[in-house]
Amino acid sequence: NKIIPDPPSVGVFDTIMVNITGASNVIDVNVIIDTLIHPFDSDLRLTLLHGSQSAVIIDRVGGSGDNFISTYLNDSLSRSISAGSSPFTGKFRPSAPLSSLNNTAVNGPWILQVQDFVSGNTGILKQWCIIVSYQTLLGNIETVEIPVSYMLNQNYPNPFNPVTTIEFAMPKSAFVKLVIFDILGREVETLVNENLNAGIFKADWNASNFPSGIYFYKLETNEFSETKKMVLVK
Image 1 (cartoon, one colour):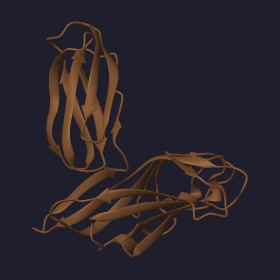
Image 2 (cartoon, one colour):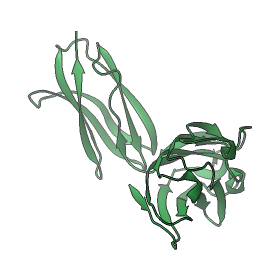
Image 3 (cartoon, one colour):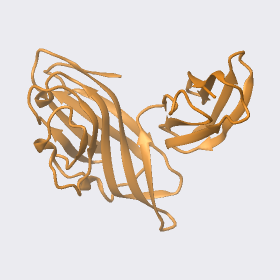
Image 4 (tube, helix red, strand yellow):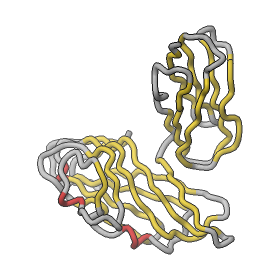
């Protein structure tokens, strides 16, 4: 989490570091502000910076509402973010075009700057991500969603019978293990055991051959480890 300070301040900066093998230039970029908590949306300006380019994607919109939750910003949309209202859940055209970041190199830091222009309160930037379409060195076009941090979501459905889905996020390439344990701590199944690029991933667990009960799933890399509980009910 990043605390958004009161003015006078340059604000808070949060960085997604992109390093995709074989990536060339940006063709298109969208931004999702997953969770930003603040009592006055109209106090805030959000700017995306990459290389020598920048785009003011949200510029003091709304009123005395609070929060940006699952706010999707895409140049091709007709409805401007200025026409939205708190918590701005949905899809909007940003305050200024993200296309100013096109044709830049994909790799390198993507920085979100959040500035507060009115004193008296603070906020928290919890989660955001970029969705980048880019050209590879081989001439292909690829699209990837890259989060700002590691994340292991609660499985769904939960309780489940017999299949459940586990979603996790990788801000960078790493060797990943996603393992299932029973209530006694015994490893009963490995869902992921490989190198993965940055992105959002899903893994399904089919527990048809396992008895009802409490199970745990653990995501582990060299920089991150988290465990969550789930319930199988037959």
